[in-house]
Image (cartoon, rainbow, N blue to C red; front, side, top):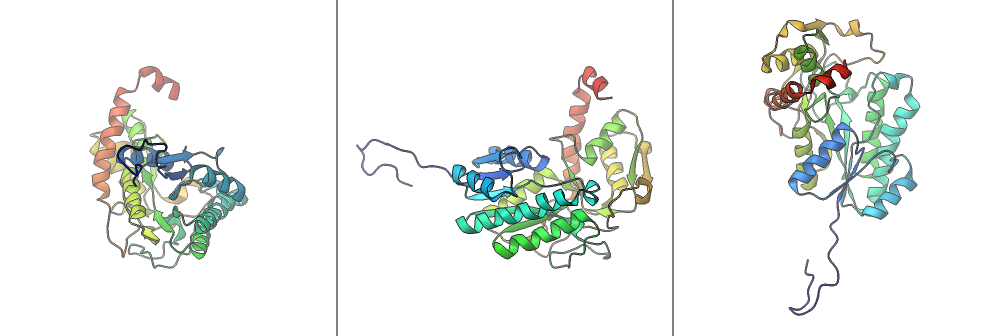
Length: 309
């Protein structure tokens, strides 16, 4: 863009850089997008729940008027899978209505949309990796809310990018399975994990970087993004603890029924893709993640550990 029409004409205004607008800015994925956009030099604005209610059209329009984004990355949503079985009204509002409202606003303004779905849209009846064209048959309320969101978003915004993913892990916050397993092993405590549910572990930085690449390339439709590999939760814990050089004996493998979860889980929800394996192996991601988590745990002040316990 030219900002001077001649060599001696003063600049009176600068071009406005349209940002990526990130919803759910205080969550795991929202914070990761902020961090990686900054690293990659991508202008971004992140809004929390108190700044944008994605299920409220007026709130969405107000945010779009203010920030004029070229794309919305929707990381907001209801994430408590078991609580959703009773709190289904709120789950559907945040996971189904919200993305549809965003899609409608994006369609009116010609703005790109990236939103996230889940491996829990599948019932686990397959024994080979689920691909993008496989029919969703969710077993629980959370999965149904995501299935309906996919259909609603793509109905009103066919050019939207819908990413199905699974089983986040990372070192940028403590709210993930791998962190909990490593912390338990580091402190010499036992750690129980399901040994009969196969999933695709997903390293958050890999997911965010790959999602941004697809968004910039204006890809559309449903994509599966997860690190390559299939593990039970117990196997994932054992691998992470082993990479850290800690004792695996504290990992206690249990069948899923032992945990008494209200929401049914598919026994097999491994994600594959017809569109290409764009992310490295889960082991690759774990090596990078475990190094960072163990540094945090080993340098954590004693006082903080005492408070946390």
